[in-house]
Amino acid sequence: MATVLSVSGSPSATSRTARLLRHLDRRLASQGHEVIPLDVRTLPAEALLGADFRHPAVVEATELFDRADGIVIGTPVYKAAYSGLLKSLLDLLPQYALVGKTVLPLATGGSTAHVLAIDYALRPVLSSMGATHIVQGWFTLDRDIAVGDDGTPTVAPGPAEALNRVVDRFSEALGSRTTLLTATG
Image (tube, rainbow, N blue to C red; front, side, top):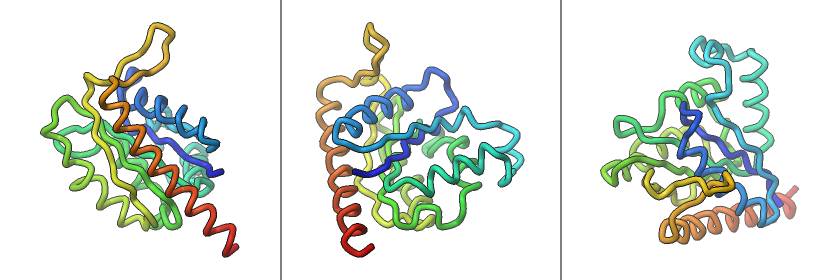
């Protein structure tokens, strides 16, 4: 199937955004996709803030974006927009790093007042980077994301069902893209 890069733009080590992504990664992997997680917070701060395009970690992250067929981008919402940490990585990628990619934008936050951050803050930058197909994004309330007793991330039943539909549409879009590339390549 497809290779999916699952990017968490949260600066927190106990991030609900990263938990949500790891939950969705399992579903994508069960559908046969190769999923590669990337927590932007693990990249060197000096490389991100110093705009060091040649830093080995930045080069490796850029190669991961290049290799992926699909990108899931998750971010907490801060001040009605995506995280500055995510912005610092996106700024270091080539201008058209998302050309040929199917992208699923996701956001987490404490209030439904932030639900439009995906469409008004994140989607425009993804589009400007040439994303071939940006599927409908999804916002999840922080309170609906937890960790089970075994350490496995969980999502409350109602939101989990909606997220499953979103992820399945993303997976279908990846399948269509992979089929098209195979037929034309």
